[in-house]
Amino acid sequence: MNRKKTLQIILEAISNIFVLVLFGIPFYYVLINSFKTRQGAAQMNIAWPESFHIIENYLEVLQTQNGMVIRAFWNSTVITVSGIIVLIIISSMAGFVLGRRRGRSIHILGFVILAGLMIPPAIVPTIWLLNGLNLFKTIPGLVLVQVAITFPFATILYRAFISSIPREIDESAMLDGCTPLRLYASIILPLLKPVSATVIVTSAVNIFNDFMNPLYFLPGARNVTVQLTLYNFMSQFSTSWNLLFANIVLITLPPLILFIFFNKKIVAGMTAGAVKG
Image (tube, rainbow, N blue to C red):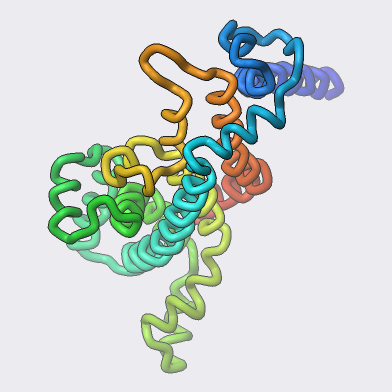
């Protein structure tokens, strides 16, 4: 027994060291180069800086183009929060219907939602549709795009979790005169907190860090999001690597902090539906 436990400790230590090397060194590389001068960061190494320029670099990043980074943080926050609210409402309702109803149409609908995970979104038809709805180059339009992309994954999670909730709860509520909408809002939705935490964290990180969709569907300097601010310090002939790395650190911190504090809830929410179902 002691030998087995010792072997387990050794394997865990090796795994932790491997993860630390795999993820820690790149983050250290970006962080330490964000403290250097432009010439020092251009050397692209992990050497300790000869002189620290922390305040200067980060202030310059925040002040570039009249505070574009600050405006980008606001836009990304609005898009992320709005998208998460809409996503939770729509996907939990869809998961409730798919988890409770039976029939051929429900199986077909489930297959269509599953196909949404495998079929990539089409850029040109989406732009054409948004333009027809007068939502192209607008934050609400991008919010709808983000919700549509993350909807299949969130719905599948909700469906698995709702299927594990006893149907007797629904029957008792309906006997007491509860309508389907009230049943969902007052009874089912509060029970979905574990899987909702998973959806919030995973979707928030993906939406906040998204680069491609804002580039295509939300062009314009006033509509810039955090990932697009990286272009401020890159050009064809010259790149300010120290400022670029400082910008990367700034836009990485919010999702990193969110993930660190809620990583256990991600695992709990994903495994709860699987185990109970």
